[in-house]
Amino acid sequence: MRKFFMPAIVALCAALPAHADTAAYMAQQLARYQKYAQAPVERFPMVSLWQWQVVGKDNVVVWTGVNTVYLITVEKSCNNLGWARGIGITQNTSMHVDAKFDSIVFDHQTCRISQIQPLDYKALQRDEKSAKSDNPQAVGGE
Image (cartoon, rainbow, N blue to C red; front, side, top):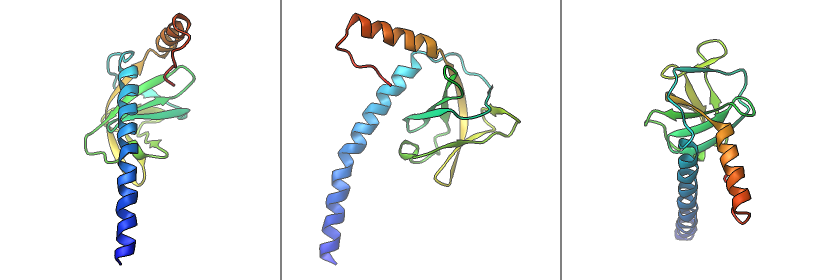
């Protein structure tokens, strides 16, 4: 029994620094997107979920098209969103996602959406491209 217990503790300790790095990276990405977040909206149209990125324990960025991007905040009762390997979004209204009515779904968990903010994604891309051309040594975000 003792031989099994010790490797489990070593594995757990080894995983802790990775989570800290992940949390720091997500905080950096959240700040990056918040800079381009616009006023909250009640809903947005969505035919399909094109791409997504978890950027905090309560935040997900979703792409519904190449340049159509939203920063979604979920209620605080959501656990382990940062570790989600895949997500879904409920749509209680046909082809729309509504704040306070729809949810982010992952790992048998449903997290109610509390806020939706459109992102000025073209401005983000333009600013990052400009920053790269001003400083060729800089490494971009995404």
